[in-house]
Image (cartoon, rainbow, N blue to C red):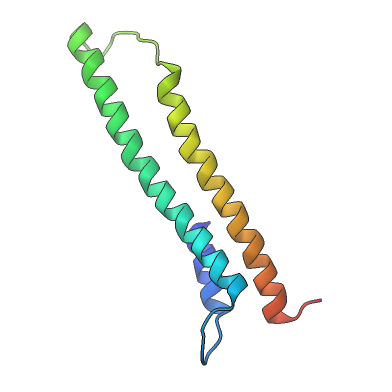
Amino acid sequence: MAYAGIATIWLLRNDGGRPFGDVLLTALTLVAAALLVDFLQYVHCSRIWKKFYNEQFSTHNSDDALVDIPDSLSISIYRFFWTKITLLVAGYAFLLAGAVIKLRIF
C-alpha cells in the first residue's frame, strides 16, 4: 500500500516549479516513514527471533521442543506493526485530501 501511495502521489505531482504541494508532501513523508518502520520491523523481528531461537536451542538441544513464547517478544513486534498502520492511514488521509485539492473534485 505504501508503494501504491507513492505512485499515486507521483501521478498527482505538478509539472513545473515545486512538484508537490504541502498536503502531498506530508502524505509522501508519512507513507515513506511507514516503509521505514516496515523495514525496521523486519530487522527487529529477525534479530529477536534469532536470539530467542538460539537461546531455546542451546537449552533444549532440539528444534522439536515445545516452548512458550514470552509476551515481551510480541509486544515489541506489535508496536512496530501499529505504528506502520497508523502512518499509512495518516498518509492516505493526506493523499486523499491532496487528490481532492489537486483534481478539484469538490
